[in-house]
Length: 262
Image (cartoon, rainbow, N blue to C red):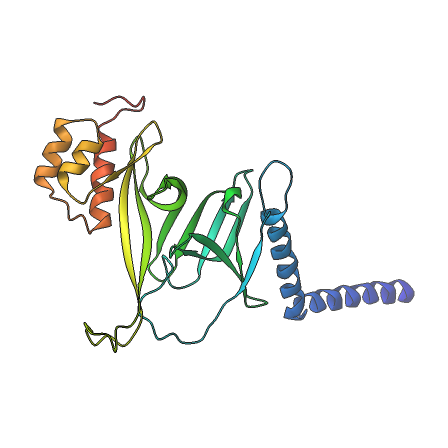
């Protein structure tokens, strides 16, 4: 009996030691697992599988963390925000630090925290992405639509989606310092100036640009007396994206589930 008891006791001690070792495993192992997972996600995003045009021109850029002397930002959101990137084949990359550069040529960038590099993503592989601003507790959905002067696919923020959707197309212009110029305003710093254009997308999926006024909005939508009454009682500030989204949400509520006007 003593032999059996000693064997049993040894097994219990070994099991407890194994459990303790698992609980106190160094954090490096977890980091290594996360690194491998991220590498696998990068392969899914950039690997050319013959069906999606992924990664034909993958580029890498070192992100500069130094303080800048300019005002504004070339990005829709200046900080890296975690994103859920939904690929066209259904795969979802989660919690990827992401920025959308809307100055000059539009670029989607993801940040490799382990190397400090940012990768320029081949946007043709992406169906849509959701940026999460955890500080403000808001989420921002971006899809690509043919907008802008050349009507080429660009990332637009979907403010409201339904039978009729409203998009915000963000751009930036750059103003250099005018110190030393004949018509100087005394501005000693460079500046990025934010611009936004609004588009309505109907059942035909073709974006229609609207001006920031009531007349242009009504022209972009099939007429409805209920909506005109809504606008009369709820005048829109077209610099207020929430009010524009609320108006389109109300317009969509005038349709039944089959898409016909009530």
